[in-house]
Length: 247
Image (cartoon, rainbow, N blue to C red; front, top):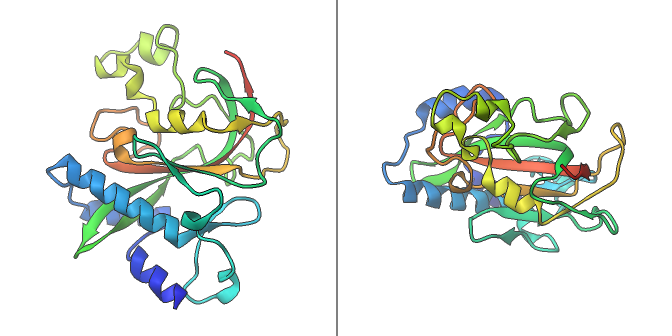
């Protein structure tokens, strides 16, 4: 019964980037951005019910046919519980996977982070509100890709005075840090602490950050990170901060 309930909830939730093109093509943008915001929130709630963390902290979807994951705890029921910030960002601190004592992450620190980064479109399909597509945020899925931490991604921090992306920008939008930075990610990452771990160490993911579109780029112009538009997209980061250094 648990599996049937979960799949009714998730509807057309998609975890494969290969469906991105088909699903995105059928997406109809609500004229009222408040409606999109509501879709994001409802879809995030369903995502939290439909997924769990495995022994390395990877996000996994419950299976409809395999009973092996019946004992797993859905993200929404984890202890400590997911935290929702006023911005709409949700973050999950994975119990037993945090550095001790760890290092406070500053807003301008250089970070080295192992992660999976995905984006989703939330939509209403025949009365069912859910994520209709899931796409990799290439090349930031370092767990499945290079196997090395991503260093200082621009969506976390960009120096407006020295970074050539800004100083040599030719449009007004591209001259602004907000064109690059996912504010909700920056906000939530500072709720965690960094390890002091060398590149190549085995990963043990410490948490999840989910950024609704309104705390990311919403409908604003933005940097081309992955070759497709982030307009109206929610971001899901599954990560471990290996190390930080002062800038």
